[in-house]
Image 1 (cartoon, rainbow, N blue to C red):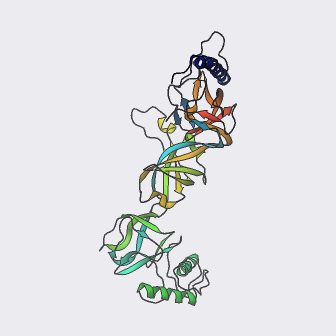
Image 2: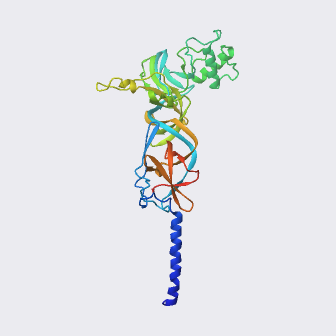
Length: 394
């Protein structure tokens, strides 16, 4: 059926009303008027923001611009992200090396020939054999006092006795012991119980060379002796079983490294974990130099060692002597406003963001930048938490 001429004529005023309404809406969402004498055309973001963070200072290069003379967009057609109120932390990232804490030498002080040695990478704990001499296992005990005399009834009191008694109790022998510096008859009985378990002569006496003393469990790093060699001298080098990272921090940046401070650690495979600083070296090492180096370059590039322990030791898996990046906190601002870095638009010598109202109206807001943290940047300006700002399409 064709529409009658009368009906068609009646639709003309309706179309005019719709056009008039559309023009009003257009004016309602329009941004602030352009300065006099300037032509308005829709603004356009040319590219995503690029951020370069070097040390504790971050520089932003934004190819897109928000110039007053540039065209304006009236209604938002881009994705948005909320303005956040959060804690911002600026970090300085420095490369280091993941390994095991400490390095020391394990010695043999007995007689006879070596009949068994551990292998590289083996972990030895309290009570376990460190090596064998003439078929006799030499177990590990924990302590800081080397065994330098026979421990037996009638000897003078001492810290070496206290050390032995602590280990006997930890190994499950002599629950009746009064742990002190006296080698009592109860101590002798506990020693004999231990000797029986080891399969050695049960005489209640512990002589130097019959046990190996280390501060804690050890991990063999390099075996130096061979089976059949005399059971004396340097057997192997060892480390603790704790993971840590050694970082050479420039002396000029040493203030970022404080003992006990938390750090962020990035391991191979982009695995991220947490750690804390356990030690800060005091001896600086000169930077590398050669015949082409300028005078004083070694001094300028000098570093100090900083040691970082992982909070979760198993987070590093089986990695050893692996590269790791440590993020040291240099600045922290709490409860500040933050926006995505890629929402920034260059505007003359500063930056702006495009704020989008709940109805889609776009407003340009000038902001001052603070510190950078990940993909966000601290901002100050006419903004509130929960507002939405435009970001480029991904």
